[in-house]
Amino acid sequence: QVQLVESGGGLVQAGGSLRLSCAASGRTFSSYAMGWFRQAPGKEREFVAAIRWSGGSTYYTDSVKGRFTISRDNAKNTVYLQMNSLKPEDTAVYYCAADINSPHGSSWSWAYDYWGQGTQVTVSS
Image (cartoon, rainbow, N blue to C red; front, top):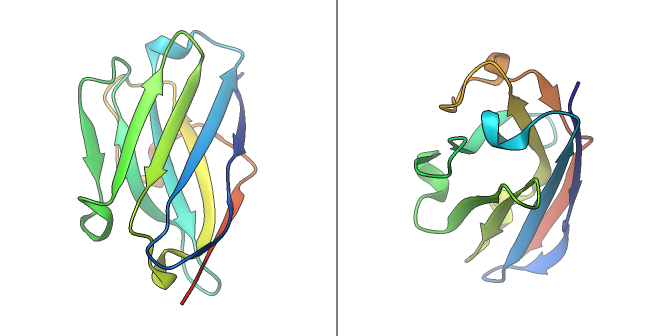
């Protein structure tokens, strides 16, 4: 079992920044990949970013490349999503997820076994 708790969401103006955190517990954090997804109202959940168990490789959806950075601190059992130059279209509930069966990371939501409760990010224009 893995428990995931996100924090750091909020309301920010366009062009601003937020850093999301996701604290994990229950299994050896450094053994599995982590991802961030988001879901806007009326839309399907979409991939945002993923990171390998070691933090050595990261993956992003095209719309956030150059603006968002995923990272992890295995000593703190925490994964982060630094979001800069935020746009109104980034408004969504953001979820972190754990892929305990692979150390590599994936953009497919079905590959992830555990999910956090989500944190709301709202970007005003």
